[in-house]
Image (cartoon, rainbow, N blue to C red; front, side, top):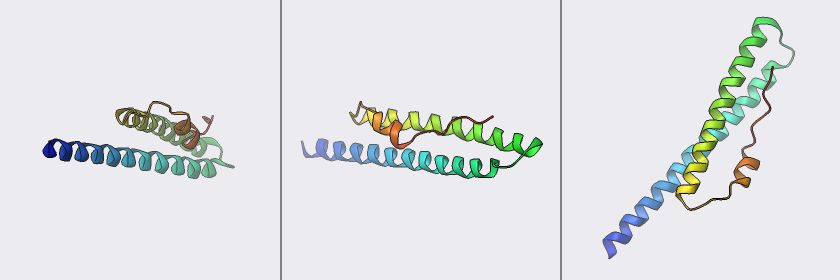
Length: 95
């Protein structure tokens, strides 16, 4: 029985570690999105188009990583995700 418990503890540790990695990735992407939004201010033409494209790319990746976070939470038995959507709110798309 002790071996089974040790394995369960290791599995839980790995789930927490995976959850932490994904959350850190989402946070990093959201911070980068803020920086891109600041760079967008006052830009026009091709430069603006590049920043808009970068924003779209980062936003899509942040959304995907946030979904991975939800999957990790569900693997841990957490099924209510309103707090995830509130804490890791995606910025509106830019044009």
